[in-house]
Length: 215
Image (cartoon, rainbow, N blue to C red; front, side, top):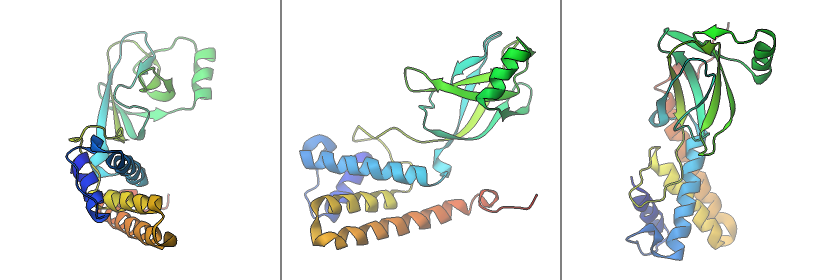
């Protein structure tokens, strides 16, 4: 479903006229904001299969700090793999990295550890790796990558659309102040119920992420 289709779906539920573009009127722009707010809520509620992707980083010799292009500081790590050496990399906190550089010096080799360290000017996350690469290595970051706000009419929704539409409708009803708040409460309840259903369906594909095993 596109951004425009989602906005019109909300407008129909509000018994409002559909539009040819999200930017057509002040009210359609407002509904567009509600759709983006609802989309953000749905995207952060669960590690959706549709949002899982791989970001690839290619190292250079003697460089330990890199920009993780495309991350936009809005992701969750699943795992990190040194694809060149076929090894999983491990997270280490900033204090560990500080201690490694202070006490062990310029240790070079195949990267085994990573730590996130700041955000670049374009919004992408920066990552430190250790040991300092002694050659070119390909590092794969498997992540749940959330999207920027939709802007163009044709921008797509990648998460389940029904909870997004229902939650956006609830926000619009709340903004109108209809029915003393009862209508918006019922609309929010419907949206959250739909979200729970969609999470259950997606989670069934990944039982290892929802079942805890004793160690």
